[in-house]
Image (cartoon, rainbow, N blue to C red; front, side):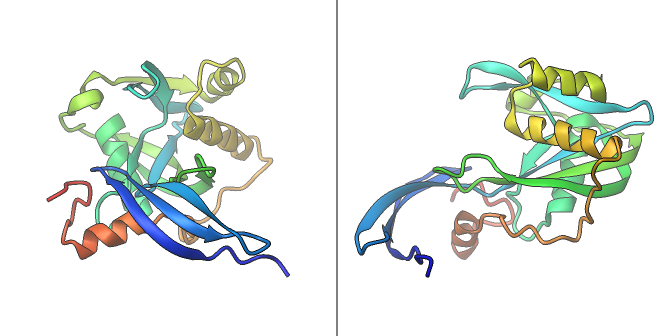
Length: 216
């Protein structure tokens, strides 16, 4: 029989606007327990938006954790209570790229750092694009650059190290497989089983809605 890892105790250590840190005491095989620190997260979405010239919409954004500007996909946190993944993706595509799409499908779900963090990301594939007005940006997004990148060039940039954001890497390579006919994108109705719930549930119980990242 496979061991059932049961949480015996849980302690909230840090509760910040867009993440939290908790320490769980978990049963281990053999009867012992061990403490595991987990970074809680709302989860996120990203979009590979492909135009009729086989180019994808990409943004370059400053990321303070690495002190560098990274080329990424339009993306955002699932930080609004009750908002599903697809609607979040549509909103972020407008806000970051000034685009809407008539066709949507699911590329991949991924866990960014399963050794210590809950963050899971759903990456969508969007096509039949149209331009719309992009709202005014704030903070790092006010310094964000935008570019249309041929899909083949984006794939090459992944392989030679110019694209290093893990979500962008997964999206670019998955989209390349779909466009080449070696894979098929899935329906957006597929449940996002990996979507984190700990922090979202706690914030909603505290009445921090609809924007769950705004602490009271």
